[in-house]
Length: 194
Image (tube, rainbow, N blue to C red; front, side, top):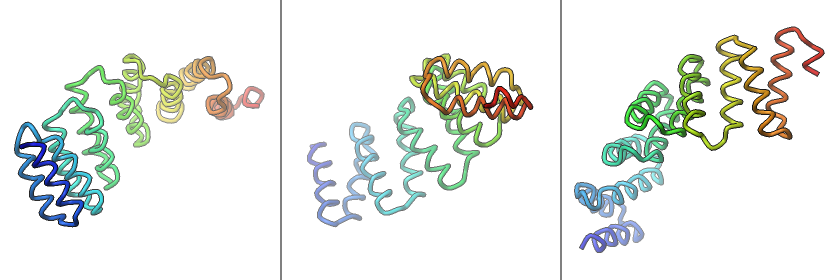
């Protein structure tokens, strides 16, 4: 019966009966066995309708029933960021990390977001945690940490060390070289910046 109900909701949505399909999905969202699938479909409908407030509410529900799934928290964070609410985005990430302390992607996302918002301490803490928890793109983590050190913490020595490590990882990637040259120039060492 569950598959028939989900199938019925899809038939309603695909035939243009959006409100009827949404009503069916809301009923299914109350059932523990079908809640996740129903909420995913409701989310897709709300996004197709460009209803970001409804999409946030649905994402909140998804996070509450599947609290360890990074895709759901990432989507929720992106929705908050798109509406300019970085404080709530950070709060949601912190809550996720408190339950999933070894989640490298969550640490990286929070660290990168904190860097962009100018919070050097929070950025450094979570980018280092991403590195410790084996974030798959260590080169990118090194670049982000270097930017935190150079731009936010005014610690050029640590930034240079991170960039040199990044260069060892990917010798042909120019981003680390470019950032390293900028730091040397800021330090007044023009010969090393060339």
